[in-house]
Length: 319
Image (cartoon, rainbow, N blue to C red; front, side):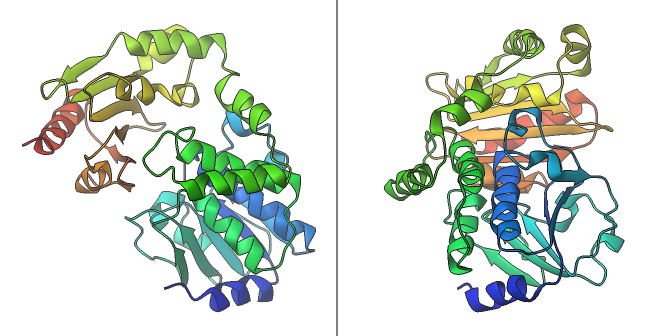
């Protein structure tokens, strides 16, 4: 049960608000942040957006994305931090000093969320954190501008894998329709997110597809990229968005796995399911988190060490 009165009071009483999302932000994190920003700023609230990492290129078309600052420190006055789409405080990437003297409101939809805030608004039944933000905006009595609608539409589109995941219900399509009626531009958004890739991204995709392997009698499919591929193509981690969907698209595959290097060392491992396998629980077993249908984790070690550990964990799903 969510204490909406407590949540709304925290926002309404705040003298300064900073909105933040997890490291290596995705469409749900960035869209939730920018959508709520527009609603709050239009109401006269002093609000800032600050993340550990920058806005990915494919989301920089969103109005307000240039107002997102980045880094470990945030020098502006703020007595309320709103964490968006992050299941744990370490996922935000900030030192303890970032939170000192500030109330932390956590808004998220991950089943693995540890309720790490002073106030927690976690709805694991929501298709995206952006869906919770839309309800928050309505409960606060704030207006929904076309800029906010565009940002929230991105959250729903990307966290349902373009309305293809099992979390795409009638209610999800109704949410999308409400956002379009409020001014969200469905086709231009899809074009910016899915049809604006660089040549380097395509070259990197071709190199990645060459790594395709299937295991577990064809029930798991694997792809990866490494630093050599980045160097050879001119691509980078941002260009790998969506690569995992090619592995999931194979007939007979129930679990898709994608591995890429993390900036500063280690590996990011992403999982997608097709029907029944709970990749959220799989990711939790490896120190990460996520949803039943989409999840991930960060791991240390050599590529081969990481792949062996992940292979063993994935194979347990099919025993």
